[in-house]
Amino acid sequence: MAIIDRIKYDGTSNGSPWLIYKYPSEQFVFGSQLIVGQGQEALFIKGGKALDLFGAGTHTLSTGNLPILNKLVNLPFGGKTPFSAEIYYINKTANLDMKWGTSTPIPLEDPKYGLILNIGARGQYGINIVDSRLFVSRVIGVVPNGTTTNELAVLRYFNGLINSKIKSVTAEYMIKKQISFLEISQYLSELSDAFKKVLDDEFERFGIEIVNFYCVSISPKPEEYEKLRKYKEELALGTEFYQQRRSLDILEKLADNPSSGGMANAGIGLGMGLGVLNQMGQAFNGISQNFNTAKSEQQSKCPFCGSYIQNGMKFCGECGKPLTLIKCSACGFENKIEMKFCGNCGQKLIL
Image (tube, rainbow, N blue to C red; front, side, top):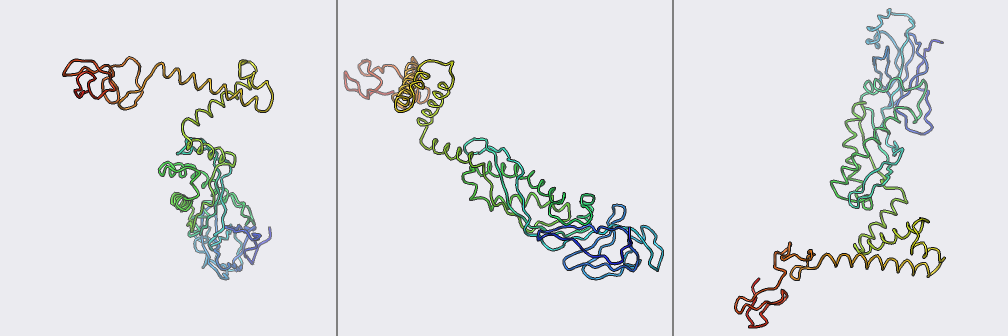
């Protein structure tokens, strides 16, 4: 490989933010010109160790300004002595348009309605490399020669790191606040701060400062969002409507099962139109009546507090009042429990 005597950043980022660039050659000589642009730093690496660091400007390489490298390999003094090393250019300007997003849907439970939904999230963030030596030592080995593309393994790692925190942070935040995904858009700013707080330490390990972090969207898939919205509406209509809907669901399953026979299949077999609906309506009425009849045969209501009680009980388990005849303390006449005064003498009845 030819020895290089003029070293500068030759990467192209196609308008995308770049973080690190590895110079394609590793063979240099003393006296070579190292050119470092504004907002850049150049770091020498030897044997995987971060050595001498150069800021913006034009630098003539010598044993004087490469003291760490010189100490490591004991280079001879003077002349155009050849030496080998790796040179990495680091972008020190703030990259404020880094994109992130969930690579696969994340299953999360809506804490308000109890439905398991597949969640997607996306946003953007800004970073600044504050420690070039630490940053390069963390990502060395994943940066190909002459590469500045935004698809580097290091950037994919950051996106994977963010993805790994989305699930736990979102679930913890929503459970604590007891909010639904139907309401999550109102809390995106607070969620963004929660994400940043958790990620700050992770990025700091790479010598990176998170300048800002935004969650632009976090929501279920469209079809699941619609399912959640309908479920909310059904609950708002009350328990009776929900029971009716469940009964219709049962009828539909019976109709789809050819081995079930009976009235449901007969209704579906009539064809389309009002006939089918009437059959299903009658079937539902039968289910409701059977349910209510069975309930009334086993239970009755306390005349004092309205709680359901098992037939045959002598006292209400909720309010403790007697459920049998009340004997008048004055004349001994037995009165019904609903009466407040004795029907024989007019004495006030005391429970």
